[in-house]
Image (cartoon, rainbow, N blue to C red; front, side, top):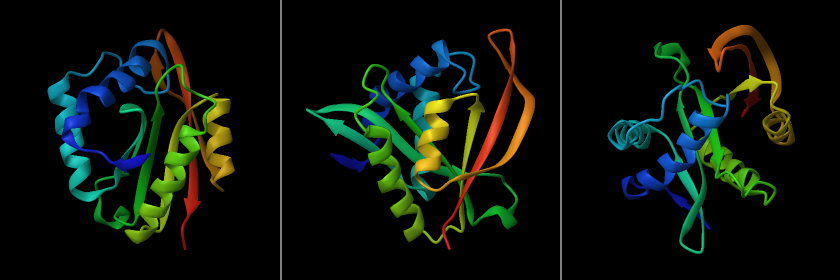
Length: 161
């Protein structure tokens, strides 16, 4: 089931997210976030953007949200999307189900474009974005440094109207 995230979900969501911080280059955070920092981040997002979770048997297996792309007011109709699925439960279409719902919610909020900002290479995430009609509009070379490696970032865009 997909439902709106609440602050009571913060610990479960943080556990999912921190796995990616510690073990992958999917996020450019380098140290695990504390519960207080993650909760504060959630509060800010929940004020203005959709934030949803995928729950099965009372366990959260993934989450997705929209967030501010850039702080300048001219970007107010552009939103950045984020999706994370709990490690070990990939292949169950959880990311696709979350993205389907998130895109529908973002359309209701009258955003013009959704941007997915991905560490490249990341074939699974690229495939997910392309499945929903996103197209790669930028490839930024060696803009992140994590695990002693320079990393590229791809920006994928979905125009909503």
